[in-house]
Length: 171
Image (tube, rainbow, N blue to C red; front, top):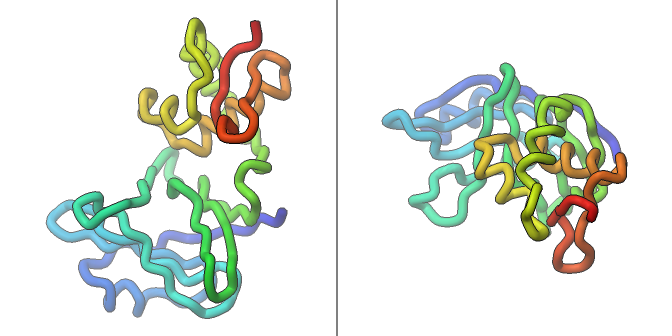
């Protein structure tokens, strides 16, 4: 797994305006109109040259969610390209993480969530990190990192098979 940085260059009103701002692999521009985020335009970070249009507007169908925490952006879920360069990556806290996202372990920046997630899981059955993030209004990648850290500390356990990404406290 390799990590590099990406940069959100700003906001544009239209797709064409956003594309004009992209210069190098990993550059991103948010398309926003009438105060609503519509798309994230990304110059594919693997260097293939493709420009990706990521839907952020739930009114247009399935949409990703963009988070801004402590001055850096994160996108959820991951971007998995089944064609072209076939890249699969996460945009999280200013970093591009190339991976099978289930294997991603990054404790940096998640310490503040360890106790909150632990308390959330008290008296709960196995719960998806996405559900936890939604309930806590938190970046899902931070919550996944906190859940994985709790597993490594022997405090929680992760489900297997279809329950991967679901966590509960050890009994």
